[in-house]
Structure formats: structure tokens, C-alpha cells
Image (cartoon, rainbow over all chains, first blue to last red; front, side, top):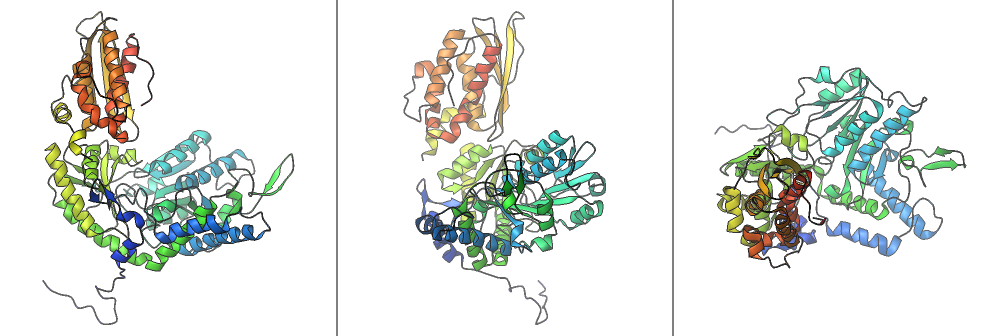
Length: 434
Length: 157
């Protein structure tokens, strides 16, 4: 093998950011569990991640010490709760490099965030004075892709039903990449919004978005990226990404369930009509009508998930403390290891990219003809937790001609030993179902 | 957990060598024929069950589907147990199977009634898999109703 010397002063091959995985694992109490007499091997982080002690402590501390409602109290506890809630917003804004804290809207999850955008479009379409960027009707088009999670399909199907607009989509190649060959025909002057997954929850594919963004800008449409699977695993910079909206969810990034984020460009959020009406989202109310608060409050009707938001802020602190580039490298190495290891299992077919480039640590596969439910059940008996089924992405399963897939997904606490346990478990599956 | 409690030899056998698989037309042109297609939305498993009956006897129960070993073996056992039976008797078996599956592992099955169906006793201890086992039985119930034969009391899976 020839070695290539990289000139001094340039980044060297070994110059990758690292962290101590064993120390990280010690922060996650659940990783000590045994399942069916075996050490827990948790390979389902794309579904939901585990929570470090630091996040659990903040959640507990909030309820034990600072519990009060936000944005409406003059008392001390109310002020503390409000500061913690708004402080979390600021942490999240910094985490994704949002130009303004007010561009971060707290939601329940990614699904709700996408629905807020879709319903804001819907509401704008009903009002004669609605901003033309959001108004949809017959002849207008919404573009998604075949690799979306149901949460980025169904809200747009419903929006198109309500407005008479047409839904179109990018196909997926045999290799599990987004097929951009029809970009010019698909994204046109008729397109109002393109809503794409940044990293597929089932194929693991990370979509390169720059060509699509350029085309979206050219035709004057808007771009939403579903970053549910990318924000937890990669450094994300919304300025760099150049999207109009991104959505992500807290529970996949070490935070609690019930908290998610819609990030939108400030001037777009400011032009969007509200979706949910209620407390906190108003400016003033008479019996006949109301005027509305500026974003983000406009989109946060009612008492928000306060403790969850604060704990998500703690999760972001934790991730930042380790460093997103280090997490990205760790997962890239795990993915390379896993692709090799799974490649050694007879009759195993990987869906999606088979090289650790342009993909994350989420690998779906089929093992011969054994149904994924059966694969998952045998693996569970060995303590290995994987997701089986259609992964809320039925069109992807149909695209690859299978009713379901088995999926292993990694995170910062995943080790190569756990991937070995998966591979050994798959041998056991083969024995049971020969 | 004891994996072999779930994957009893009988279940794996029905899965690998299903009995009576494939949708068939009625032999007797006078029979009522109806079918029902059921899916498990959480995993995408599908089964179609077709019933041919003269109103008294279930002359044939044919099926097709794709899914896990539990759901497909269950369809095979359903066919084996209920084909050729009188409707009333068939629904007693149906009810016994549903009770077994809803029993969280606390019900002792009667082999005289359930035959190979007793192998599913272990499945009842795995809530995530109960729906798999019941899928063909629920499809059967709908298909039978459409073919004009009565149903056993409503049970929530």
C-alpha cells in the first residue's frame, strides 16, 4: 500500500475529533439494564434516543424547584420558569446557528411542526389578503420525495386535498439515493413548497440539498427540510443549509418526548397566519376578533411543554459539550464498521447506501425471507433492541418491494461490540428459521 | 424470555409448510363466497381470508397473505381448524382462540377445541405479537359475516 503524506499544517487523517464513549455511556442510566438476561444492546436510537443523567436531573430539578407557568406571571417562580424556557430557546437557536432566537418555535414534535407549516399555508389560502407565498390552489404544486416519513407525506396530502393543489415527489434510486434527475421538471414555477427529508429515517441516506435549494430559489418556491434524523447526529447550521424551514424533535436528541422545534426564517414566520388559537399567541382579544403576537409566540398557543423544553436545552448542552463533529465521526466509523460486519452475514440485503458516505448510522436490511418481526423477536431474546416494520415510511418499503424491514440505528453511546452482538444475533435468527 | 415458548415447533412448522394456502373458488356453485382483507398497520402484515359456505357449513376457508411467522402460521391453523366445520362450532373455536390470545398467558387452552392453536398460548404473553396471531382470525370473522354467517361476540384485540 502506498502511503500519501499530507503536508504539515494541513488536516491529517488522524485529526478527527474524538470523545470517550465509555464515559458517555456512564451518563446513561438505562444502558445498565439487562434484557432477557443479556446486557442491553440498544440499536434503536433513530426511533428514540436515551437520556443522560444530566437531562433527567434538569427535568427533575425544574419540577422540584422552578415549576410555574411561563410568560404570564410576575412572581419569582414564574420568572424563573420563563427564564429557563426562553433560555432553552436561546440554546437551541445557537445549536442550529439560527440568526434570531425568535425563529425557534417550540412544538410537540416534528410532526406537529410540519403540520403547523401546512396549516399556515392552508389558512393563508383561505384569506384573500393571505401572503401569496403561502397561498395554494388548483394548479399549484407541493413537492416531496418517496423517502419521506409519513409525517412529511400525510400533512401535504391533506393540504393538497383542502386546496386543490397537486402533490408531486422525487423518486428514490435503487441505491437508496434521492433521484434528482427530474429536478427541473419536478420543481417548477408551479411549485409553492418543497418539503424533503434531510436524513432518511429508514435508508439512512443524507440528502445533498444544494442543487435542490438552488432550483427552489430559481422558481421562487420555499424549502422545508425534515431534520428529525440529522439534527441529533450532525452539526446543523441553518444559515449554511439555506432552507426556509427545518423541523426536528427533542426525544431523538437526548431530550424528553413532547418537545420539538420548527425553525423558520424570521420574515416568513412573521408573514404566516396562526394555526392554533388560544392563550399566549395573541396581542389583544375582543369578543369579535383577535390580533396576534409576533413569532414564536404566535405559534405556541396554550401552556407549552415547559419542563420538556428546558430539558431539551440541557440535552443541547450535553451534545455541545461532546461536540457534534465528534459525534458525527463516531457514527461514521460505527456505520463503516456495521456495513462491513452486516456484509459478512449470508443472505443479508441492505436497503440504502452501502458505503458510509452521504449516509448516517441508520441501516435497514432484510435477512433472507425471515420476516422482520421474527428477526426482531429473536434479537430481543438476546437483548438486542432493533426496530422492525415499515418505519412510518411505507412508500420506501413498497419501493424496495418488501412489506417491512429490520433497522439498526446508532448514536453517540453505541459501540462496535454492540454491532458484533447484532451480527451474532442474526446468526441465531438464521438458526431458528433456517 | 424463552424464545421456544413463542416459536413453538408447531408454529414454525405451519409457517414453513402452510396448510391450504392460496385463495380458492367455491367447489359448490351454490355457496356464498366472501372475503376480507386485514392489515396490521404497525407492521404492514396483510392477510386475505375467503369463506365459502352454504350458510350452515364452512366448506372452505382459503387465505393468502404476507407477514411474520406468527400471523402466517395462525392463518394456516385457522384453515386447518375451521374448514368443513358447522358455522356455530367454528365460532366456538374462534371465540376460544380469541380468549386464549387476550388472556395475557393466563388462559390454559383446551387442545380438544383448539388443536394446533394451543401452540399460540405462548404468543399471548407477548402483547406486541398478539395482533399478529389474531390478524387472520379477525379477517375470517369479517369474511364469514359477509358470507352471511354469524359472528362471535365482539372482542378487542
